[in-house]
Length: 166
Image (cartoon, rainbow, N blue to C red):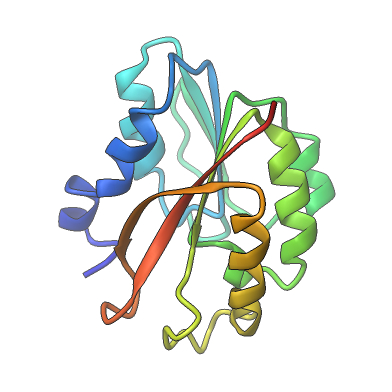
């Protein structure tokens, strides 16, 4: 099942992201439900630190991870940077202002990884899920697919996209 400890241990998104990075110094993990992905990334690069933002995460921070356990607006996110890498993994379908978040995340770092839900997933608590097809179209216009994983609804695959600014 997605989001269990076993799932994170074998998370195929990690290798897809890590293989495209070259010693990042600062990572933003926006909309995280925990710090697991950030912990794995900073373990690979000793000089790397991460800011993890999510209204469900623990406020526990380490010397290399700053946890912000609340929901931030797009303008608040914009004030956290700059970053080398930004992660937005399965979060935009929860954001009513998803276009504003996408714009600020795209400008937060030269490398952005976005995971989009599948439009047919059953996600009754995702406030903007009805716009998922539009989200995919918007991300497809600026990025390239690099991996896919089972969705929260395991009948469907989610796409991981790489967006790089020039």
